[in-house]
Length: 340
Ligand code: PHE
Image (cartoon, rainbow, N blue to C red; front, side, top):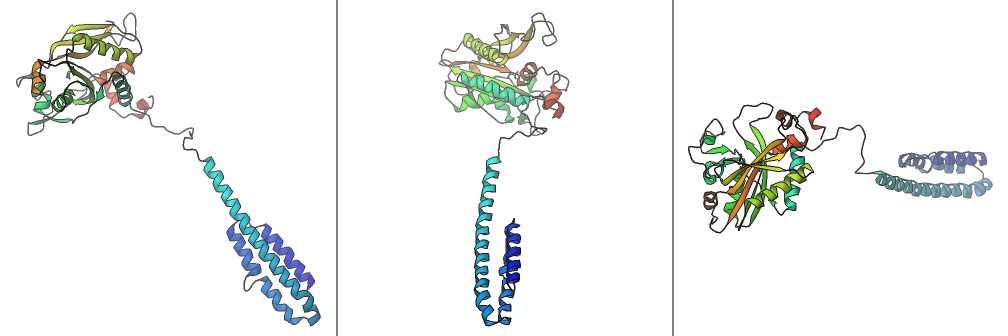
């Protein structure tokens, strides 16, 4: 009997020491302490031994049971502790910012990058960013902008009209300026980045869709000097150096006077392929907002004046990032996009 008890005890210790999971432990409990387990079996043999032996082995069997039960409880506590520790370790190791090598990262499109940069520059000068629809009315795109009904830009060859010939895809983002002037009282200082669409044949520098970023400032006593100061600050910050400007007369029905602004080529000293050897690059139309436009938008031109300018965001992005074909910007080619 004693040998049997010793064997059981030895085996129990081996089994419980090998326990790793709750499930292992449950197997050990059933094996030794279960209703048909080793201990029940052992107890049942007590009836076959003499009264003297019973007096010795009865208490020994009970002690064994208590020992097993205690060790079982200890093991439960130990497993729970280990599990909690593992969990804590796991959560400490979880790093949301971890940078896995060899992964294909997304990147911001050059349009997004340059828009964010330009918005920052203008916000630092007190401008707000305005938005508007791409599907527009004749009034917002042409009528309010002093563009007469016989203006060639209205022709079907330039403008994408909807079949009702009333609505169109905006040909410039000046539409947002009209909407802003109609809904606000001066002073107004906004820029409006966004898509513009024109019915043009596609080549390396033209596409039917391009991006513009027009600006508008309306207040009392606004002058061409204010316009040029803002444009210079903008271009200097965008290209990271002080650039000379060249101003030429230009015609746009919605400004008077109208000016074309060119900047000294930021990339060369003697002429390069970007400036086509001229040392100047044409950047934008601009001017003082025509009194007819102010009137159309409910602003009194005898009190207020303002300036507007409209560089192509597509052109600025191509210049800044040295992109030579507009089609790359619109292609979604990963090889091109992953450079940004
Ligand atoms: N809206 C003009 C265009 O699309 C650009 C422009 C804006 C010109 C403001 C002058 C003043 O070409």
